[in-house]
Length: 284
Image (cartoon, rainbow, N blue to C red; front, side, top):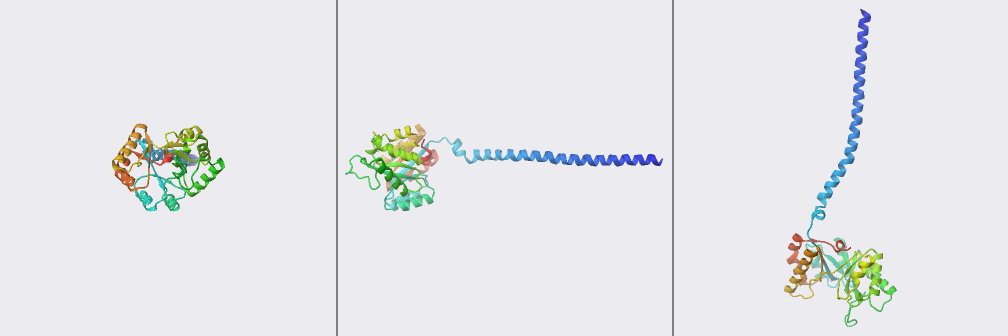
């Protein structure tokens, strides 16, 4: 009788141990499975979050099909009072600064502090030179390759942070394939872009830059060659129409009160119907 009870007790003990061991095994198995699942989730979730962020955070660039417009204000650095008015516009405009204006350093400094896109407004020989003077820091037709590179280097040092170059005057020099090639080759070496202001119908600068693989584009419209308000309105409408038809357009203005009034007048329309972008987004 005692032996039978002892055997039953042993069986119960063995069963209890087996149950406990089974629970222990199951417990550790669950921990192992949990760790594997959470490990996979931890790798999977960030990609979900990143995709969600990329869709939401960059929605304007991914789904915004509005035409793109870039506006350059040329000839900055000569008059700080008029120049600074353009800093107060609620528009992302590119600032093209002359290398040796009396206020060049202060304008460049402020532009860099505010994170605005800077361009060197490179003086080049115009037709009618020397009667028509491009100003200090100009590249002239009689200069050899070394002189042109030296002038360009000095001018770029005055516009710290410049992302590219557009020509100031230059109706003569941009028609000369040999001379403009020297400038474009140097810009390519420095990873800068070039905007052809198209101050002459016979310019070769834009086409040559494209052949060389230099990021480039060209002016679509001068906004303020004529400061008559009606004419300027027509020019602005031309710019916007070109953007609608071609997807992109580049307008060039100058730091005067008439241009400032024009941009203030069109500020709301541009912001709602177009993407106003820096020049660097429109070069290819």
